[in-house]
Length: 310
Image 1: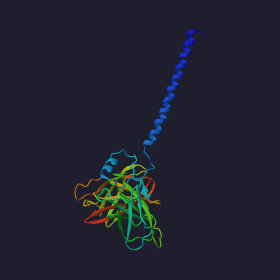
Image 2 (image 1 turned 30 degrees about the horizontal axis):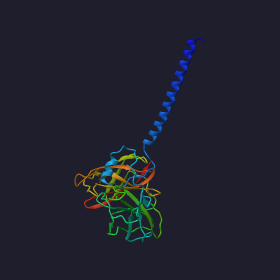
Image 3 (image 1 turned 90 degrees about the vertical axis):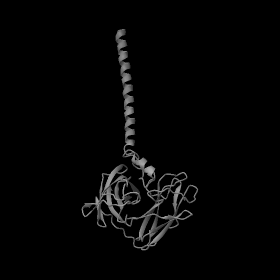
Image 4 (image 1 turned 120 degrees about the vertical axis):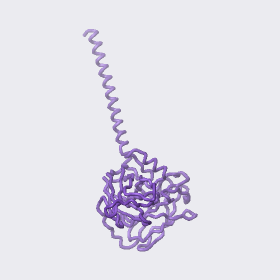
């Protein structure tokens, strides 16, 4: 082989090797990009739902891209998180009559926390739900000077209940962060479970019909619209309730995971409706029991419906 031929063959081999290196680098980059994309789409689907947030937190979350994790405060199934703990000596409550549930929120030092930020006009939101997702109660307990909260519960049916405390510390390491902590209590007696109503797009309460629209997927934030009507006509006289025209919470069938669905409709007058916008992030697939609270003419109504999330 002549010198020229050998030189040409050597250059062609070097060119092929260079192309292989570039191709390998490109494929590696593509693989890295693919992994990155999968982590960005619906980021952290195993994360927990948001609950009641401060105004600043809600504005921050709602400005984020749909599908990204907003679940900083957990699903409400633990009694302790990030140094804060829901403590109570009460494990049983009487069935069939009103009862007071007393509890404290303690900090990392084990001492009661007494400073809480106002969220939707209240420093503490308290919920109770039976294990079969019946008997929903949403209360606003009072706190004494020693940091002990008292929630005056309406009569409980016999069975196992979970109680939730939703709050935002206004000082300390958790300042400005939203928490939902919970514990279980038992009301003695015949604890037969009620079957969960089938999934439906609407529910009736006190002569009103509540309709829910929105395609929700587990672990991703999606818009959802709730409409209120009466006798087939749109309701436009909803009164403000907790700085919004409706308050919406949800509980997951089976484990009773908690979610607060953030209202998007701003209160601009003393009358609202019929359509109310929400940001919904339900972290798990399956059935969720939704409780929508709205107010008309000084009366608070609570509509309940089952929503199936894929």
